[in-house]
Image 1: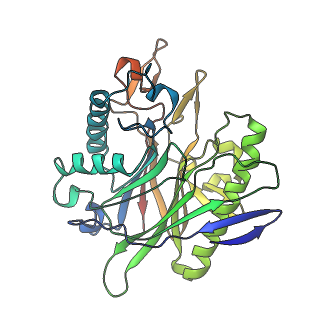
Image 2: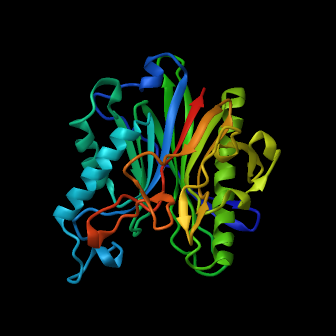
Image 3: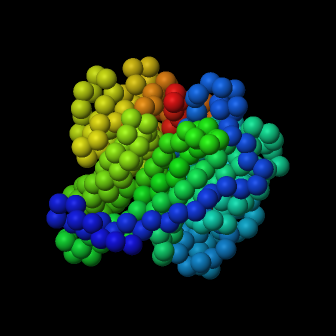
Length: 336
């Protein structure tokens, strides 16, 4: 771990390198077919806790007054497995997963459903120590090195708990000279503590992301490329637009394509809040990648009609033992 100054704050990077490979993996349907395309889906699955109490869970999932149980967890897990099978992504990125045990439960459940090139042979996960929820990746493409980047910023008093930036190498083609790209998974500070506080910490999370994107693009020269996805808790309009008509926004100083700005995108949003759509779940690409299609998926059991006839996320309700998440999955077809 070493400190690096970015403007007036300190970024501490904790770089962890190891293979995320699991036995029996396949390289992805798109790769196997030779199409040079991959289908990436990012989904905030809304506080997905297991039935074991660690003490870090949100209040409704622990304590003597909670109805949360192993049975309810298994019901919810089964619904998620159904959804994942229907979504059929080559790379599936999940936010708000409690721990690696949940990742294994998902993996084991999918192993009984998916075979051959449909199977997810690789996965990885990261959560900040002491945090209730983290982010995970399931992939049909081999995964290589994993890096975890975290902020340590004390110029504005106590730092709130911030989820780390997860970076993992995706091997698009294997062999002596494999093609690879870097996948970055974000879950930025929410606005629950106020918009001003959120803006302060999101700016620093953006600076950390920018630093790593610049590294990837510089180290790899013309072959550098990356996908950035997750729940940014930031509307599209809150990013700095750059040549908006061509689908570019700025991540710090790095110009990136954004799925919401793709000319064929018709989805209104991924998060329904106070009777309005918000576009806070994003997929960006940098380098030699092209977004072919982007949408918020609204054609599965994870959506429902509200009283006004709007098709909105089917929010998970513990007390009803029903629902999926308060976010829609966002899906992006990418050419490499």
